[in-house]
Amino acid sequence: MTDSSQPELCLFGCQAPVPPELQEERLCVLHFILSTEHDCARLRRETAMEKASAIRESEIANYLKTSAMKLSELAIGNAPLSDELKKRILTTFLTLMNLRESLDRSARRCVQELRAPTSPAVPGPSRSPLLVRLRA
Image (cartoon, rainbow, N blue to C red):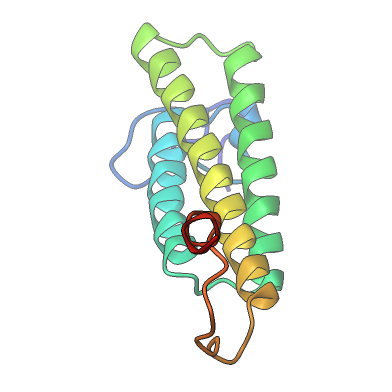
């Protein structure tokens, strides 16, 4: 049995306490930030390589929202944060925003590919305005 008066500690070897906002994750603020940054990098690579299906994109968007909510709870919570942790939280918000933009670009590329003709265009007479004026 554990003593409930003792604060829950993060990962093995980490002496930082787990704030109430991160009880579900069982991570301290720094390890939560590092984990989020690592996940964002992996997800950006996944979206950049266009491996994400519509369902996966929805899962990534859900992850973005959940992580941003957790970060905002940490940022305005009661736990005292050093200036360095505050800076890292802001940087992680930027990382989440960049992942969101990458996800949006990936979705737009998929839509454009669906709209593009499937067969190659047959070369025909050019309809360029410049050529039309030159021929006239």
